[in-house]
Image (cartoon, rainbow, N blue to C red; front, side, top):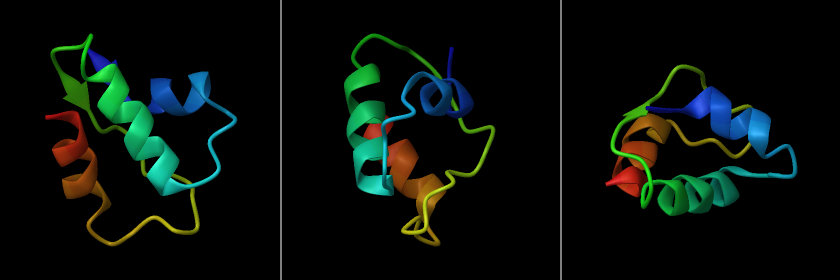
Length: 58
C-alpha cells in the first residue's frame, strides 16, 4: 500500500501540488492501493486536493 506521507518523505524535492500529482501518477503504475493519510503541505494545494490525488492514482 502506498501512503501519501511516504511519497512526501521520499520526495523532499517536490515544490508544489502539481509535482506531487505527477509522482502519484508515476507510482500508481507499481502500486495497487493508495491511502491519503496527511494533507500536502504546499501553498498551492487546492480545496479538492483529495479528489485530485485519487484521480491521479487511478
